[in-house]
Every structure is written in C-alpha cells, then in structure tokens.
Length: 204
Image (tube, rainbow, N blue to C red; front, side, top):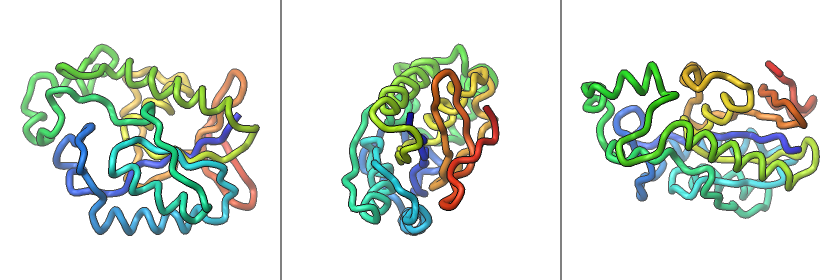
C-alpha cells in the first residue's frame, strides 16, 4: 500500500484571514508560488509515482511544479477537496470568532456541521475513503503526492491514527508542508520521508 505525501497548498491571500472553503479563483500569492517551487525542488530526488490534487486552484497550482519535475500530470481527485463550509465560506475568521458556533468548532468538532455545509465526520470519512481507495492502486512503499487542505489533512491523519475527532485540531499542518502517511494492512504510521533512508515512522 502506498506512502502518501500529504501536501497542504501554498500560501494565498486568504490564509489566516478568511475561510476560503471551495471558492474558485483563490490563487497562490507570490509567497505561495515560491513555496511551491521550493517544495518541488525538495521532492525532486524522491521516486514519486503520482501527483494527485484537490480540484481547487490553490491546490492545483501547488501540485503542478511537483508534477513537472517528475514528468507527471496532475490527477484531480474530488475526494481531496476542502471541507464544504456552507454559509461560512468566504467569511472572515475575525467575524466567525464572534459567533456562538465558533466555540463548538474549536472544542467539540465531533458533533459539528457547518451551516448548510459538511460535518467534520463526513469530511473525514470522505478523505479516508479516498486514500484507502488510492492506496490499493499502488505497490507497497510507492510514493504518492496528494495536495489538499489543512483540515482535510489533519482529519485524515487523525482517522488513520485512531485519534478522537475532537483532538484533530491539535495537529499542525502549515502551508506547503508535507505530512507522510504510510498505510499498511491494519495500521498506519506518519513521519518524515528521507531520500536516502525512506520512511521513518513517528508513531504506529
């Protein structure tokens, strides 16, 4: 089963300010473009078999330099798309922090559904099923890059490590960061990828 390199998209002007959600037209800014180029260079020596990305512009733009270095084409997968934030999409984080529901998102995401949007449970099930299906398509220890979004990556890691959903926000996933996730029969591990030594698990 594959080793996934879960990449969060690069920086854009909405990060930390607004909840971009599934908005189209949210592109990497100059910093994000530099992050994407640097990330592609850092991954250039790894034997990457595929580059798969969320359909959103910021994910596609992060994936493209990585794919180019390896003479691959970016494969779009809807299962890696950002959470559907419903009515919250596009709103400022400052504004959302004033709402009564913000506390529930931070303290009890297990039971939360975004107004007219997706629940954390649904988003987690979606990305877990996507990665499980993808893992079956590749040989053991194949390296597959999946470019997605912060909460989606955190939900995936939490799921495969059997972390309570209410604890998933303890995980930190920065822009243009790489989280290595190795799926094997009956277990999962995450940790650093090293070009010389391969996968090393922090936890199993």
